[in-house]
Length: 234
Image (spheres, rainbow, N blue to C red):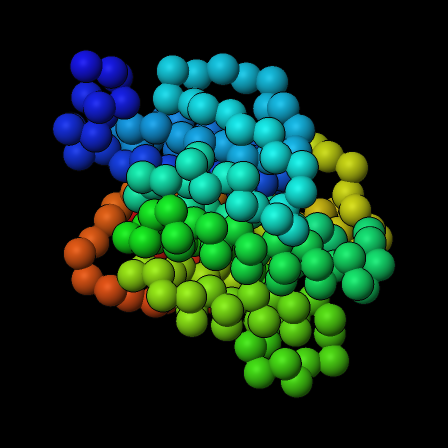
């Protein structure tokens, strides 16, 4: 009997992660591998992770506009955590929409066909607008992706809308706004605690809700305040 079968028999969850090389996705991968409720982790991305772990299966996939080739990989999964994304200003508006909406919807389509009972956790963002009326492209596109996921038929959908995500570990910030917020983070956190969340804490919340599992159908939109409340309860 394989180790995967043993894990499944023990009631552990099979998790798939998209975007595990990103800031939040990296922590999601770390906590998923550490979580005893998770039996196996499949990480799907364009770049190699450079790590190995008994729980980990790594799948390289270059074109998220077409995820048909992932049908077998996505079969038999209990939950997906989707952290794939990019920053406003780092790509053109058309590419921002492609990455934010099209990649999410296509991945969800194949997952839904391959694992119809899987839960879906999505890294959205503060201000996401499913009505499409926002003047901010990022907010419109995240909202469009949210709306598609909630209508896709998954039994459980968890939409995470963090505000400012504190990187925790030093990195090259993508733009001036992020450099400024990192510089004033201690003051900003003290004045506006519900407008910040640490990247590792956000990842832990995303893994916990995906690994917890429940028989009831539910769709939750978790604002920054809700994410922080989850962490306090945990």
